[in-house]
Image 1 (cartoon, rainbow, N blue to C red):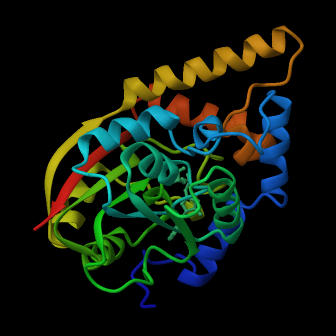
Image 2: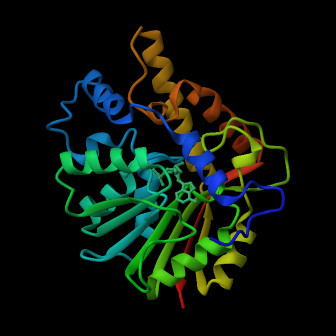
Length: 291
Ligand SMILES: C[S@@+](CC[C@H](N)C(=O)[O-])C[C@H]1O[C@@H](n2cnc3c(N)ncnc32)[C@H](O)[C@@H]1O
């Protein structure tokens, strides 16, 4: 793989391994199923939607995925690519609620295994598939997909231009590409840890204007862009209120993204929220089309 990252970054393989390590958990599937049981849900009988409190690893969770889907031109039977699919919540949403066939790729083998385990237990094993791979070298033939999306992944990728070229290559002409990433609003200093990075070495946050340039250079035409800052801040404050209410009642926190992020979740989310409030970062949606 040709290196196109910024000067001073480690070689891609090392960086990608470090990023996969950042997300690694150790006993993810067991932790997820135990958390389901603790929340009174039998994981053997659960639907894909029952997992949505923790399998959507991005600001605003399931609602953000549904909002992006509403802006994307997707129809039942379409083949979708999920770039950086995590444990598969968005893929299962597009499969169960939009009737699509979704292929997810992710750097983390552990996340892919968890994604497969949840999909097969919830009856979506034949409509979703997950492969361990890098977004910079998609293991697919040209023009294989009818649409693609990338949710909260670009913050880990210095070579976004290269990734968007890869996505363009595997999409058919006229296909839509939805992005929902945390982007820079101004040049203020980032405080770590953040949900996607323990330190600045694995964080590559850029502004929407840069995304626009990379997308156009890769052959995409931008159809829509919107900041989701207020929406995300409201979602985070609801999450926090639910955790505080549980704490006040002496109960464990309700199922949520802390399951993926581990004990440092409150610090990581707290830093992100502070930077969103201060106007340094904001989650932004960009919908573009391959021309
Ligand atoms: C914050 S999570 C988002 C997961 C998922 N998109 C979601 O919204 O639930 C970021 C994911 O991107 C993956 N990732 C980061 N860099 C990647 C790359 N270069 N190629 C593939 N996956 C990558 C990570 O392993 C992680 O699963």
